[in-house]
Image: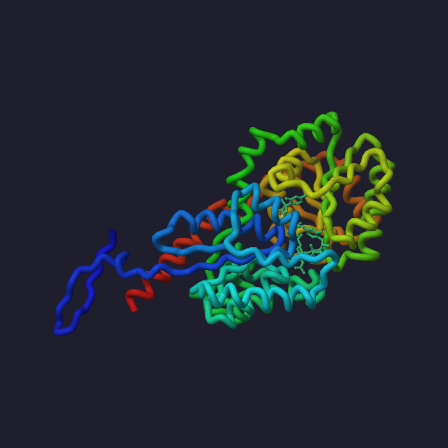
Length: 401
Ligand code: UD1
Ligand code: UDP
């Protein structure tokens, strides 16, 4: 219990239990895609530990459907609001408009004090604007990542910048992201460096997953038969079209020239990804194209892999913690920390570069070992605890003022 002096007038002071004066604050946590769900799940759980302080509700836009539901099931999250917005082959215009419009009744009925958004998706950007329109304070998790290139990643760099403009409290994962926000004249008192919540999710799950692998991964592992594993994911919009064709050509060459390798590629459900990947890589013996893996199976697969090739943001953050070398199929990254630490190399979508860097890792033991050392530039697994402490502190400040 915390006791404070409270001025009653006429120079009378009295002790009060401040918790009695704390009005329960309403928190709306909004997300829509697989990576947002993974990174918001530990925050939902953390808020739920304090039901006397916060009335916490989850709203999913369902920008993703199957890939979102996999995560909700794993973390046992049952959203209070499900906008169910995904349509096959959706575009940015319709999705942005639908999110803002469909969030309105949720915001008007629940009237949150704080709206939490995460990262850089269309859900993030549109929900932050809707939250701002409603008069709630906007809280941005994974704030401050920048490439300063408007078109890479597209449209995520601009989504982050727009979200940053309407955000009241910025939860930055690293010092680098904090510096980016300071350069945009954000008040330092509104920024908290927390570490990335993706590491909270990873550390809370990884031991359990290693102890209890699912039937599916046991089957995949049996099929691998101790072969070295190259794990692949890819979905970025700026790589759609020519970029994906170059990526698939590289994977085909690697598979054909190294038959001892096994390549597993859980293919993203975007039709613009599914089509070229199935067409170019569908018939190669040592490439297994599979459906997106549930989060726990994917973590297990990353841990089993020798090398990871990806354009994913989240995978770039998880792999250094697992000590896995990552080739990132992007020209630039808003996550420079792992590049600096030496676990990540940017290879873009240049077919020859992807092949050369993969062979260098397979053939040069020293290089492989250098890239495989464990690094944790993105957090210590305590990000959500820090965010909650900050929110509680805000409440105490409000009562004191
Ligand atoms: C989105 C995000 C991207 C994020 C990625 C994570 C935007 C603009 N893009 O890209 O920042 O890195 O998610 O994966 O916010 N689909 C399904 N089922 C699913 C998910 C997707 O069928 O569970 C298909 C649908 O046809 C959908 C399409 O994929 O229309 C594209 O989904 P969308 O969220 O617009 O783009 P992503 O490429 O997934
Ligand atoms: N992931 C997963 N199953 C898969 C591939 C990835 O659960 O088959 C997880 C991965 O562990 C990471 C997140 O999804 O946490 C990354 O999502 P994605 O690459 O779709 O989006 P990005 O991080 O690039 O925004």
